[in-house]
Amino acid sequence: MGRGGAKGTRVDAPGATPYNPPMTLRTGHLLVNLGTPDAPTTEAVRRYLAEFLSDRRVIDIPAVPRRILLHGVILPRRAPLSAEAYRAIWTEHGSPLMHHSLALAAGVRAELGPDTPVELGMRYGQPSLANALNRLRDRGATRIVVLPLYPQGAASTTGSVLEEIYRVTRTWWEVPAIHALPPFYADPGFIAAWGEVARPVLAEADPEHVLFSFHGLPERQIRKSDPTRTHCLATEDCCDRPDAPPCYRAQCVATAGAIARHLGLAPDQISVSFQSRLGRTPWIRPYTDETLARLAERGVRRVAVLSPSFTADCLETLEEIGLRARADFQARGGTLTLVPSLNAHPIWVRTVAEWLRLAGSPATAAAPQGR
Image (cartoon, rainbow, N blue to C red):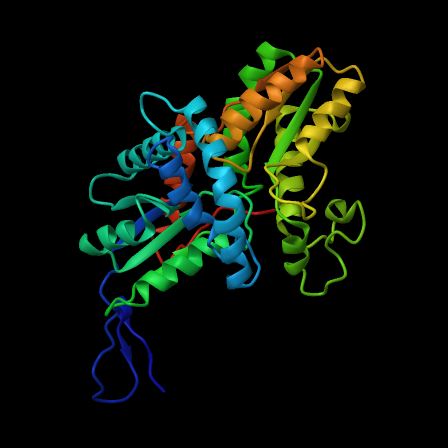
């Protein structure tokens, strides 16, 4: 039997050709966010929503009913309303989500150095995942580290990103090695970044209560994530149990708890809720708008809201919470403070760069931690 030799040489038999390790893989890094319309117009928003909501993982019903629902009901009603909402948050830099995502990518690129390829791709809209992947290939990347910028993983977000990446790269003659980083919902770096962003805002606002508002999902999608069909949403406290499987809702609860502990908030000072529901089917509860109404009824007058399912401020944070929810809460006699998202805060840039740096070597393959 042969034995390992120096510098990776292996001899399997007398006279055998020495084994040489494969050439070093060049790693490219891909940051992925959801996407945004090109402009705050009905036409652009309709185009964006048509791509987004055609995804079978987003509206998880058969193709024909999905197409009828989308083109016959959702788009005619939602596109004009969403365009108006986008106009309310559009800036001189364009879409806030795009602006902050590009700034994050630029910051990470500066941290990793000019010889390390870093690209931003959007799951829907531009720059598309296909374009971003092609740019990495053009720069010689034979291994691609993917970081979906969704802290909590779900089939409709992280799952959709990975499915699209595999769809694009399967047409390539040389298929790259894909290394996807897992959800980072309780990673210490992610939690510390939120603490750095939130602490000064909370100190100034002095809220009586802190609400952690996460993007919602239909209940049926949560149940589909439970292969046993016996745990998820079976009881009101299913996500609080120590043996809870890390479904999307459980990850949100874990994120809120970790940030609250980092900030020194007591359990009775916080609540967890879910926003952005669509349609008439049940979505995961409690709902953010109803939670804020109950807080006002209890006499709470100063509320701060964090939305840690988003790493960049977008329509859901700036318009849904920062404008509509704030106005509703003010109408009930209170004040609502929206804590900005991580955006391109220096600590967040450094955290993402470090994840990518460690994951860039197949030998280390380090990744952000869940829980």
